[in-house]
Image (tube, rainbow, N blue to C red; front, top):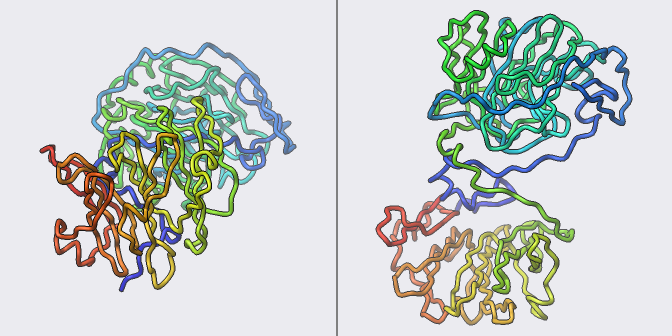
Length: 528
C-alpha cells in the first residue's frame, strides 16, 4: 500500500481541485514583507537616495557616494495607456524571468529600462528589472536596477559603478499606485540618472559614473545570482511591454512608445519583451538580438516561475485583500476557518491546533471578532467546559447541518499521521442560540476511525438538507457520502459513488461540490 499523503512532506493541497478550474485567471493574495535591516539588504548608512538621505544602523564607508539631487517634481498622472494584449506575466514575490547572458545587456553610460507595471503589494527593495552587483552580497549591491524604495512604496532607479560606496538611487517623490497600470522608465545619460512615470520625469540624480557589468544575468521580477538563485527582493504584480535600450529616450519618445507595440527595428533597441505569450516557459524577444526570456532558470517548471494571466481578469481585480492577526503562541501547528460563532454577522475564527504528526490531541481555540477586525480568545464563552480536541484536522465544512438557521462546523480529522494510519474521528460542532459550539459528533455522525483528508457539503439529493462527502483516502474506510436525515443526523451511503472511486486505486485528497455544468445539480470535483 502506498503511504498516504503527509502534510509534513509536501505543501498542503487541500484546495487544488477548485483552483485547477481557475488557475491563471484570478490574482493571488499578498502581503507586504517587513522592512529588512541595512545589513540584510546591503544598503550603506548615509547612501544618497534621490532627494532624501537614508540612514541605516550598519556603518560602512559611503564617502564615494557623491550624488547631488538635480530635480524632483510631482509624480505624474497617468496620461498614457498600454497597448492591448490578451496576456501579461505575473510575479508572486519570489519569481523571476531571466535573459541570456549577453554583451548587449551590459549597459554602459547611457541606456533606458522601461516597462508597464501593475503593482499588487508593496515590498521593500522589490526588484522589477536589471542586474544586482555580483550576488548582491556586498556594497554596492546593485549594478543597475529599476525597482522600489527601501519602504517598498515608491519606484526607484538604482545604479553603481561597482565600487563600494557608489550605490546611488533616484526615488520617486510619491507612492506607486496599486492595482493600476503605470508606465515607468529609468534613463542614464550625460552623468544623470532620471526616473520617469507615465512619460513624465519625476526625479533626476547625479550618476556615480559608468555602471559596472558582471556575469549576473539580466532579469525581471527579481534579481538573479551567478548560481541561478534569487538575490534581490521579488516584485508582486504584473509586467508587460518590457524594453531595454542602449540610449536614453526622451520624455516625448517614452510617451509615444508607451502606448504602442514596437516594430523591433527602432534605433538603440536592445531587447523588447511584450510578455504577451500567454503560455509556455519562454517569453519572446521582438528586439534585434533574440534575447528570449526564460521563466525561472531553466525549461523545467519551477517554484520560481512567474505565471501567465489574462489581462482582462487582472484588470478586473483586486478580488481579495488580506489582513493578518496574531493568536497566542502555542507549541502546535495552526489552521482554522472564518466562522460566525454567534450569528451576530461578524466573522470570527475557529483555530485548530495540531502537534507534530498529530501524536498529541490538541485543543480548539475560538477567536471572537469585535467588529473592527480585532480578535480575542473566546474559548470559555464558545466551548464552555467541553474538552474538545483533534489529532490532525485537515479540512472543514461550514453549513446549517441541523436546519435551525445557524451555521455549524464539520472538522475532518484523519488521526495520527504515522503508520499504520488508523484514522481519526471527525467532529460535528453544532451552534446553539447562545452562540456556543457543542460537540455532537457521537449523536450525529457515524462513529468510525477514517483517514479523512477533505470534506465538502451540499444538498446532493435535493431534499432540502445538507449532505456530506467524506474523502477517506486509505487504510480501511474508503470514500463515503453522509446522508442527512433532515434533522442533522447522518448515515454513511456508498451506493451513490462509482466503484472506481471506492476501490481507492487513486487517493483523491481534495474534494468540492460544484455545479460544473450549471444544470442545477451539484457535481463532485476531486483532486489528488
